[in-house]
Length: 220
Ligand code: 5GP
Image (cartoon, rainbow, N blue to C red; front, side):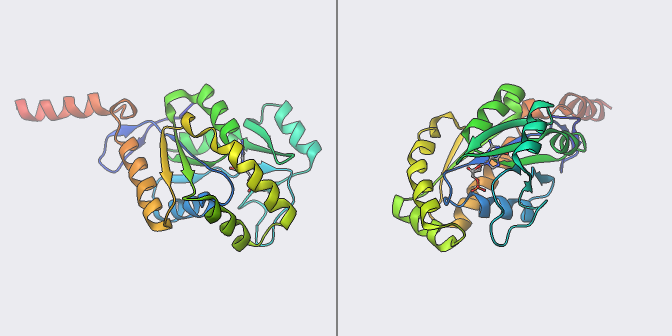
């Protein structure tokens, strides 16, 4: 699934990776994703399609591509979605072409998707997927963030709180768990995970050639 290798910072060719952040709504995943995209080079965001209504402040094509149910179904049926799931009665899915293009141009791809999507990606891309689950420090904190966000009605917030407990139950399916006490610390932790995963031997497909080159120089 991960495309051609890129030239990473140290000149060793590497397989691209699919970096997944999941959490219950309100645990800070959207902010963490934004910080990662702003501050980390070689990482591009997968913009999902969704049938849910746009929230105030959201931009079509940046936060999501907003589509109707018929268009969503058409994309799912034709294989245009790499994974898809129903969340809060709406369809959410990852357009396949954009991910494949980013990976083949040497970027890693960041996904803000739920546990259902993460399971599907894992089935398709195996070890090219690195998954991180973000936990809120407490239920009160989660509720406060959902209210401060002020984008959803009271009813929607109640629904999200009751879903949160179910979503949390999937934590053990993830490679890494980060508790978001403070956004800058959580960001530093997530960034460290990405840095270390980029250095993993099995992703660094150019290592044999690189070391061979070093040996040649040493033996001269
Ligand atoms: P929200 O409506 O708050 O933007 O997102 C609701 C949930 O849907 C979040 O947990 C988010 O991670 C998840 N989600 C967003 N896009 C996708 C997607 O493309 N696929 C899947 N499986 N989940 C998604």
